Image 1: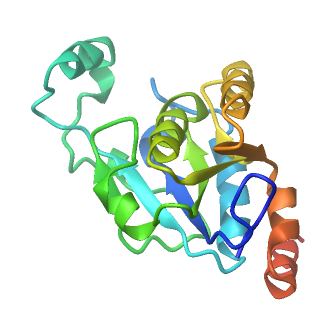
Image 2 (image 1 turned 180 degrees about the vertical axis):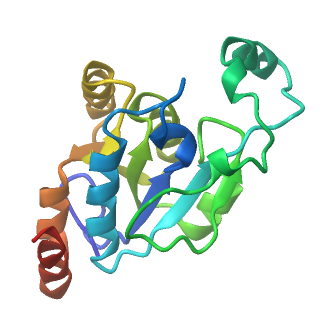
Image 3 (image 1 turned 135 degrees about the horizontal axis):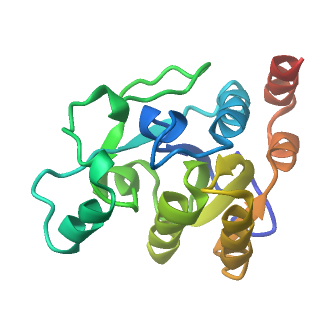
Length: 200
């Protein structure tokens, strides 16, 4: 159980890992510079005993409505949904399936079914200023407590990462922004020690 001033005292925490995929790790139009730093922090959190729920951004070839214009801008990413660039790339974390959506927000029926109203969505992954932001808003609207782990996320650059976190902090108490060390200190003692050993 994870609790804080922004969540129910007994709220259960669910580690949600957003879109840690090759498309955002490898050099290209959607490259996220601090991807590897976020990945290492996510691996430590996953080692704590919080089973990760992993999502993937997978494009819809139909490109309905404004999505067609979006991919006109990012033509290099107009790739087949089966292309390996959409594979999970998260060293140290075993991916046991994923929730795949063609949208920025990964909040939807699949996550809602696994995280009941009143429980805590612990958000990590990329990009802070896009899919993290969109997912946080969707989850908060749906009555879930949202905790964004700032050093387990990464944005297009440091400035937009910080700006997005500042925006999300305005939504307290529905959304809480914390560091991984703070989250670590809320975990049971045996889990905390497991994470610390992973950092050594």
